[in-house]
Image (tube, rainbow, N blue to C red; front, side):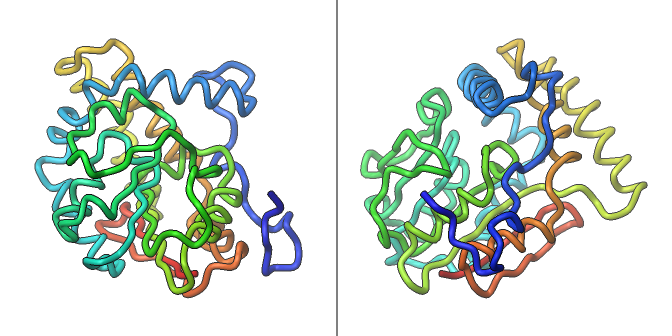
Length: 257
């Protein structure tokens, strides 16, 4: 599908969320990367929620809920949770809307979705951000929580959001961003690449879980700059693009169709 561009040049848009990380998936081509990501998330799914609660010190669910409220989520909206994983964002969506029949989760990992303890009325569909199994203009609100670094093509994913949103519909992309300052980056790197994998080794059941958290940091460090993400959101035709930052590292990218 051609990617719409309001910049005049499709080449202006960002496609790869970060450069290759061959330490994890060989030569770094897109199919190898996707196989690695799906295999890793399928394998570590049983550990994911437990470790997230420990590492978030109990604040993760509160923050996600507040970010959704700030982005304008309300009752009555048809909501798509892209990269729903184990349903951590979906659970907070339902706390706000109370309407499981108006929530659809999309994720490429059946293993992660199998760990999502959500009401039966929530539809969980296997798919990717770049190709969602949903009709045009069918959603009022699309959220993607901490999955931007794991997709293959930012521009294609954002164009897909534009396609699936109704006119006036909202986008919220939650992501962890590298701190602006060098000392802040050093502290976060020491935590994400050192402390977190150590804790994961102590409390996880799957041997690949510590590696997943090291991979998390490496993708954060290599991720496209926030300005490039915002430029690409605008470039596919989305409007009112903005970014809010919490605690210096939590980015909330918002936009409208």
